Image 1 (tube, rainbow, N blue to C red):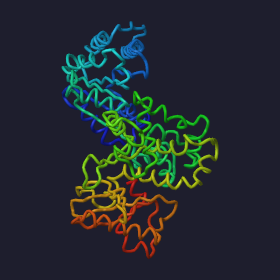
Image 2: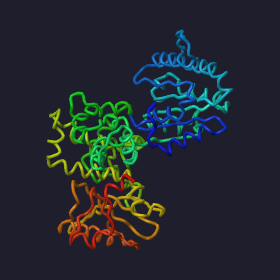
Image 3: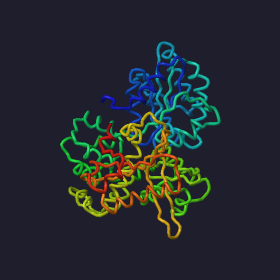
Length: 477
């Protein structure tokens, strides 16, 4: 196998579960292609004795046939095993296989794409719960890993299970996309040498999804890679969007409609605003869709500063979805040079600004570290003031409220060179800060922090306004 890059904390959690003296039921979840399977196999390579992966849209009979093949492989038998009639029989066969093995050493069972195994009226989850409660949990050497891309299903059906699996999970692990640091290390491990601006461009298109990053070839520029991967006739990300949502959610149309409206508003939307724009039900449907999208890592939610949860703002955080809806899904052009032409259009500025903000929101720990406040308790939020007639409004996209009686108003700007604060923008910053102070009256010092690609060009308008500035290098640390 290839070496495991990054995932330091995740690896430590899994290794601790393996070293524990008791039986373990380990639930791992995260979006499609984020590297869950590779992580599990890398950590448990020597202990893995049985693995099965659910088949998307297969029925119970096909899943049981799949189980039979997996068990045959585990036993090393050259003879084809009989297909179990039901999951009760399947788990009995699994117990018979494990009995002589589990007494001698620590072993791992791996159920990949766990939600897909639980087909309609198959009883899979019920019999899995019975298998865990009556057999697996009684064997200290046995570690059972269940993994799924449908994060919301894993949480609702397993972690919040009210039946046989209630409170049975001993270790839960949510796998998120690579950070920029991990992305840089991953690309270097594959001999892809790019400067950080090129890597940032690729991250703004693909996010930190290992399977997407795997498509990057050494010797290609970011523009060449985006052309080939996103706009070529057989580019792997050209038609990934529908596959992505269709594989995770039963009624993906609702989820896609929310993603589409969020992609048009960089500042985010409240639940009521989303309902108004999508015409979704104001009841549980919207609540469930938003919860599932957030659990799966596609959106982020923030309670605005000094507001209640009823006013929570939702933002699209998945870079690929934003890029697809902005360019791939709308573009009639394809082939070499497509992205170079598209990136010269006026829409590039709005997309790059939104995408850069999404990247910054995912790297708040790195931002805090660069500001020297990593050890200070900080709450991040957003803030906006919708004016009445005759009053100025204000929008703060990232606000860091610190326990040391300071507040950072963060402005995030993507630029191909040093960012220049003009007279007009300087006035906007001063007004934004003043509106915030007038309306909130915080008993704290308020700083303006600029987060840009190459820094802020020093001039008369930046002096005295910007108290701290970070470049994209801070996001990589």
